[in-house]
Length: 367
Image (cartoon, rainbow, N blue to C red; front, side, top):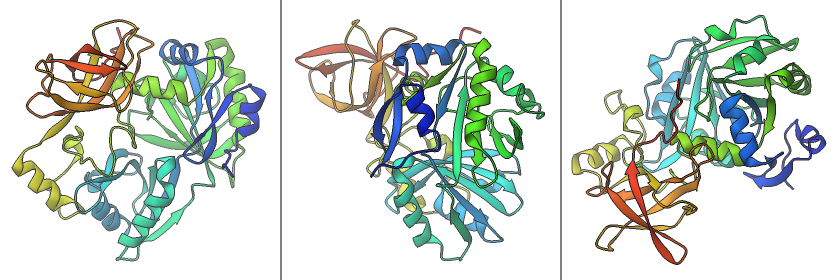
């Protein structure tokens, strides 16, 4: 039996196409992926991402546990700040990528991927040797992502919080559409200005917030957006997706996450393996690419070859960029070949198609 978010009935009313995603019955599209994608790039879109998981850490040992299980340095956080990070196994393989929110001096919220909630929770529990107070509140927290250049104007109509002053990767708690205790976070997965709204369903009505956003967003071109456009939007920015671009078989250094891997912060799970990997050097790197020929769309699993027809890697994510009208993607490439502007060949169905390696983002805003 698939789980449903609090907004399931709203998706049905809007004639969404629903699919199984991470064990949830989720909307993949409403009016269509291209239309929804461009709504986010040009106006605004609203995503139901309530399938994501939320774990609460509290007490004097909360930070110690977070530092043990994550690769970034959470001691740099202050209340009201969020941080992107990842958890690793002892061998450096990635358990999951996640966000950490510092709620106050001794409490945090960790946001994990939907398909990994059970696995992540079991992993964290097994590592909680310091007996930090932890709670899985995934079923009680609804999550909406309001994304796009008009997101600020829309949200401001529903709250007294000055949302234009919430800087990237910071958050405030406020009332939205008359509903209290909403975490208003300037984060997202689209590359656009926007917010993620964490709604505690034990004290607030998520449907009221959903309805009010659409009522006040109508004049701004707000549209509901499904997981299909969420994927094309994130890929245009080169954001990694767990299960595709990062897995337990990949490590943060080869996945381009070296910038958030704080090897000097003290001990953490996977540190020794990552130090060894850094000293030895990388065998492969996650790289972006743009397909040269039109109407050739790369897909996950396609093989990548060099100019001498040697296999040098494979595609992890690929799509037809809606904004650029070109095939784009990411994949692991042999380290000696993973150089921007290098030309490679991707096996797309029965022919090899030329592509140029590049560092994301693929889509860059004009202003």
